[in-house]
Image 1 (cartoon, rainbow over the protein chains, first blue to last red):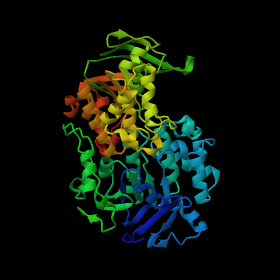
Image 2 (cartoon, rainbow over the protein chains, first blue to last red):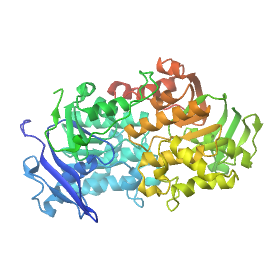
Image 3 (cartoon, chains in turn red, yellow):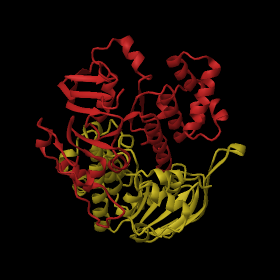
Length: 289
Length: 258
């Protein structure tokens, strides 16, 4: 890879779910390209940010329908890929970290075995080698006593440790792209910072690309390189993370203003008034970049 | 209005016992808005549940409005002191209409005049009479939290205990609920105790706060001191730093405080 080819190309992505009351369009024409960078997708609940993340791995459950003019990972069309080919990509090339370790880890298998299994499935390595790698990975996500944690079951570890274990499992096959859907929302702020530091280092050291889905504007602005702001299934604005404060779209402005802040002593918070025009499909604003 | 002295709450028995709150004392004045801040497992919600009477196994002294409280609370206590919970999806009965949800406390306390009271409280929380015969599943998260606040307010209490009232909501809805709580506090002269992990939310609604870690009170400070970053304890300073967004260098220096 020469460094100029994008990791991920998404053009006019649409996801719809047929319901009793007609078709609900969760994602309506989202386009972006991702290099070796940290891209944040921000929005409120129902904005389509998680569905966008899931549709990259074609993990949108039936009867949801995913269409796109282009959905390609390192030039390979993901929409046309066979199930067999997708299985080779999922986990190995593109990994996904979900929000809650409680529901994402196998409760009846020790965490060490789960991590080692992730490595063996993708590399074909032997059991001893897999265990050695799993222990090294646990250490890389700053788990203090890897040997002891290796033999624990998921219910025996804290939320913060569970999330680090999830990240270890997802990163052990050394994917090129990590999709992280609210990976730290269930964690305390200090643990959140430590987990983000781990992800940050791994992006930097391995040149991994990352799609970081979150509702937390401040967090994304301080962690990511670039941000897409989604509203009602559309990207209403995209900007460099450092330029978020200068965002121009009224929705982004409204979101930023409605956040209480320590450095702003005003009491009454401005309330977001939603403009139906924001849901119309015209060009998104390109600000800051 | 609320005085807590040497409160201890333990869960489990024998060797498995966990001391969730370890000798905590604090006082909240009448009409004050007090924040209780900490990370998960710090014991902040347990303090609130002991004060509200939801948790029976505690030792120490809890007094509300000058009256010392025992394990059993009287009906008068609940007329005086009401609670709003974190998750508006879990705290409303899914098969009861808003009308029935609000009528129940009125009936329990024999207040009478339910019709007028429900109508008034729904207006106060900004929902209006149109919402009276809806069910929780027909409401958004913010509307549900307004119903939960209305249910607490319908008894016209003097103390409102709030356990993470906005952390399940989107930021734009959070702003609406914070504005509502601030208005209601001013109109009714309410005493508020707000439990939250979010320092900015506490700063927005409270005058004074206490920081908790592992069942102990780390420090008490005013919101003005918090805004100026004038935390005395290293734990509070770390919490403050962590809540101001991602910083690679700061994350490196974080440590555990026992």
